[in-house]
Length: 530
Image (cartoon, rainbow, N blue to C red):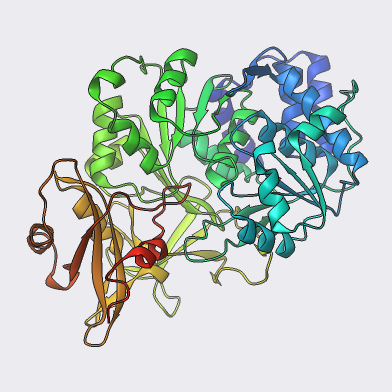
């Protein structure tokens, strides 16, 4: 780190309040911990317990724990896992909902220098079995409710449910010896079109410039409550669990998302930050007004949204309801974050995902890898020092001049703001024209009689592909297929008009709110038509 970077980092961290006066003995202990353990979860947990021992660390469905208590429990869990042979070179699978066990187990694995693979809690037995084999899991720890899933998955390694771990804990809460090498982490991709891939990372600790960029964009403060609703096994949830840890804040989590409970948690704990995916924000806004006004959410200073497409209409509605405190992050599991759109950009340029923060570079390249002019569409590439090492099953993302592909297509406007049009693998080619379903979906969701919508393409002998729209209409609505088609015709080009419209009760989505398009076609009466 050069002098300029050090000054910038100190300034950015100073604004969070984390750099309060440190006693000499505390400073020496922090330096010793950092030297022994390096950057990572284990170090951050030990420092949090040292500097904010009585600060509330986690609030979940069971109750609350301080940072000293979390550190002690994580050390105790680490000793149980060590007796099972967990250490450097071993890979541990973790399946748990958003609760203290996820936090404690993640910290314990980090303290032992083992590799961690958090599993999607929606995995079925067959899917789980395939991932267990591919990732080379030796020990799997999980919440008690997932024991039947692991049993049916045919896992041949060591399976340890939470209750067994708790029963094996001794009185020893001391920090284990530092491992010979730090562990890695494997974050699963969303897997909307097939088996999720494992994105391997040496660490989730971003470079200094990226940290400075994040704190420059977001008004985060130390030792404040953060409500994290996305699953902790995903990069968004895991990343902000890390932010709460590093800032010695209070992580407020629940086993399952409930929109009214979120409002209650914000009000009860005077949370200043709320992390969500778009569908969660939509469900909160769908609560009756008389329910929403019961809860005082005026403490909120930041709402961070990411994980899937945030429509312009939803962004406006959220800011109208909670104030101009919405920040939309764009990125990928493989690249880390790429851009952030603050409230002013979301007001002035609806639909934008913002600009790259300091330490991050974004480029729009054509099929030959050549940068395109501003305003012209191309493939989105990102460079930030946060790129993953590759997929555990082999392969990786395309890299050009040090920048990695996100797999998305988009453009940058004259003000330098990025707009994402859609995924390369979701593009529909109809009659020789390229259609990104996201554009049509966003339009449909803006219709006063539509709750949700998704657009997919099916094979067509004449057009190559044809568009099908799946629409969730508002209760009591008499919306018809002809009206939907006419609405699209009045706003978009002719080739973007859905050939068919099917009304459904809900749009299937994964835990991050991304549309499961294959699931729609499997249930559709149109999907099998030629």
